[in-house]
Length: 157
Image (cartoon, rainbow, N blue to C red; front, side, top):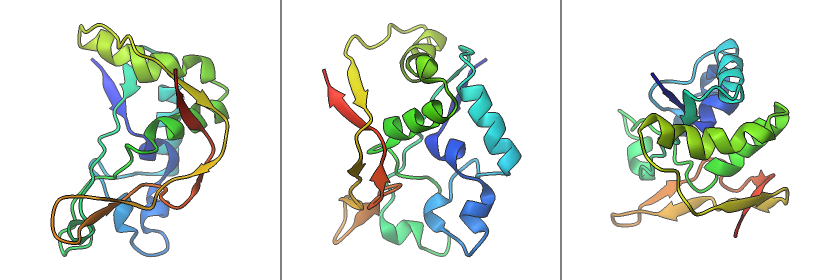
């Protein structure tokens, strides 16, 4: 058995999503739940247990689809996902377990070799882009934490 955990399930609860008005960009499936659930997911992700691993479930839905009457589920987090995971693991005092969660546990679960390429993360603030162009006339997808200062940055080896 294995379980993937998204960065937004580690950083948000349903009050963040619905507490002060609906924030449709946090609508995902499964939906974000209680603060106790969020804390339990952080504990699981940072535990070092090999059956928990990265799963961004990143969804670059166009703005029109996110804001429609039946809004599309999913959060477009790929541009900031690894940095968000790093922030969570740092706060939990578990940076030494980040590589297993992000890079080793998933391939092991599926019987695959881990990626031979590596990245380096450094604690340097940068601002995430607000949106990315997607297919369709005048369409764009808003990026999770877009326009915000991100605490970690990827530096390629």
